[in-house]
Length: 273
Image (cartoon, rainbow, N blue to C red):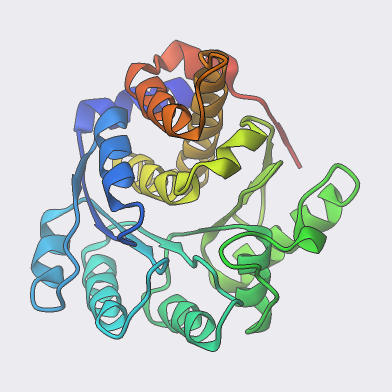
């Protein structure tokens, strides 16, 4: 199934509008090109509605939030929803400041995203309206482990039911739920956490999968999570003794560019709950 979704994505070559943070915009754009999509990064409130109308999907990432970003995201989000285009919300750092938390909650309410993608602390901040996010990383107490997997799966399922969105909680174990079914995904490498923006890239990738397969958002989101984690594994297998996180970042994008549908189908590691 995941291989078929990747084939569909590459056949459709969807245009994805990303209003994302300037730290990772270039890597997000390159990852979109690598997976078979086309990126456009427009964040001026004066044009975002027009750009969104041209695109097949929208990704909203609050990583470098400022006063101009939020109205642009709201306008683009409303336009995308009016057109029936999928919207991904990445609430980067929600819970770390009042501004981030309020902005994420405002977007959640006004835009009603198709997918919410974040770490455990960010998603708990959305659920509670506050949190203890450590910068943009999950707090140690919030990390998904085999011991708390059932508890975290129940939380993700409940948040999906409450918001009406597919929810993807990413970390050492990834959870993707639509309130009825939950995918527990085991792809990935811990070293991906040392590369700035792998979460942002995943949100952009999910936007591409959703745009190509809008009728199956749960499966599209799970495919994106598996694909990103698998590319992290493939990239790590290429690392030499003198290679560091900059090389690893490049290898991840290369792995996505060369990822075959059969490789994704066979390499995806998951269970259903």
